[in-house]
Length: 59
Image (tube, rainbow, N blue to C red; front, top):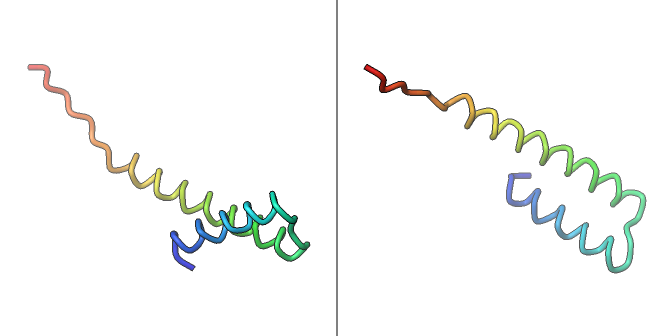
């Protein structure tokens, strides 16, 4: 499952939870997908922060 599919499925489960509720399996899936999302987000943020280079223009 790619990044967009993960987000779409998390949102589907969230809407279903608000409207009719989730089964035990869907709750487990939602938690698993949220964990995957958070790990991907952290990795992406870390990569962005690691690529930042500070430049000092003092002479």
